[in-house]
Image (cartoon, rainbow, N blue to C red):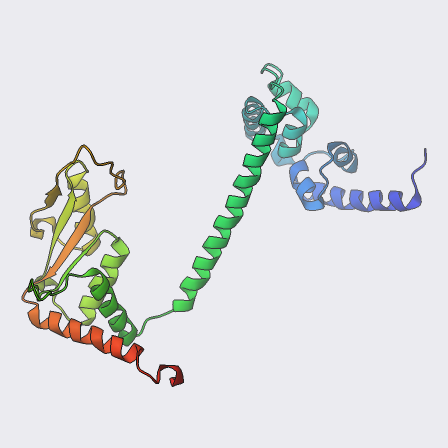
Length: 290
């Protein structure tokens, strides 16, 4: 039966594009994705008579395709799925995987569960990409920090995370404890801004006794650029067998304790700076500022 003129024109137009892509060195899979043609019979008709690109003929390339085809077959993929995914012919797929067992027909309920799981994984990937884009854009909004901006950020950081004086327990000294290396970096940059000499700063590690203590000590020493011999004695947290710990694994390095020696006067200034920020932030004319 003859095709309608419109359909013939559409096919010829697609064929011209497919042939141009093929001659430019594209694989069937690349042409499929470029043109949005996911029917393998039509795709093969579009490039009929056009040899595959040289790179696809290389032994190593064919070996890679064969290995991938076998991997997909073992995962339960059909010939059609493998052919569409790899952009190769059905005869090649058959040759590469014919010694492997045919995938078992899945129960309809199991197929529905699998489809639901795949859709959910796809949705999670989209959400994660949006999270990454938001964080990247927000990071760019900060730009360079002025000395004043770092100064104010450091005061707030210390008042949130550092030790503080109490009426019942006088602790007028600067001590900062944290497990986040970025927090440590910002705090040290702030001390540098305040012109606190590194020789007036001491370090020690607090960590669970079952962790990699030497590895954690070296990690923190490298982070702050200090000789491990200058560190104070590491504080070990005893293991409680009734407690299920979540801070485990290679990423667990305990906390670093940073103490500024003879820092009572600095501590008092920090407290004053903080309440200066509070007063400025809660002033009645806050909304009229420019």
